[in-house]
Length: 224
Figure 1 (cartoon, rainbow, N blue to C red):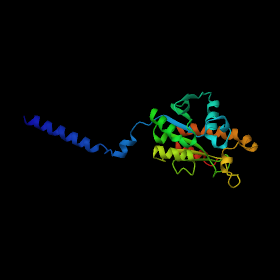
Figure 2 (cartoon, rainbow, N blue to C red):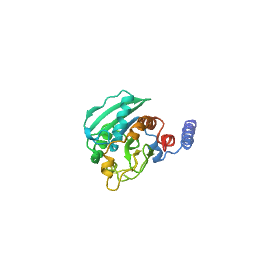
Figure 3 (cartoon, rainbow, N blue to C red):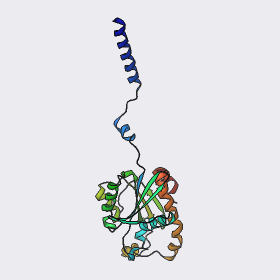
């Protein structure tokens, strides 16, 4: 009888010692232990319609079109946009060109994030930027809309600006009062000559974001 009681206490003591050895898991650590999503939503901002195809404001569309051409992908007309799916190194990239026009881009972004269950940190928005010289690349993990109507609507709809944006410089070489004409105007001849190389770099940035991660991508490509 005494041996049986002794065995119980001995077993209990071993369990207590084992519990003491287990590391305490805090709430923020539990969040970090969640499975990482391998789905990414790559959004190129632009306006639909033949008159906008080669405009500076449509660089988001142009980058995705070039990516799709290089990887032999086809865009399909879907709800709120055109979508192409690309699989690479175990990741799935959804390339989205919203058909809502620039000012309502957020509606398409939110719909496809929800539909494919894509977390905010895997959202990548490509847009033009007047404050950067032509072809300059700036990748940021968050920020204001910078006066860009597409980003402004995305921030409003998502109620969040903590997502990655890839700003492509289009420069500000326009006369006073001519900003709209410039942004919605075609590339000049020098820009057209330089664009192919810039578009190919943009394709590598998209792949890098999904495989190497945001920090490595910024280090590798910002300012290039």
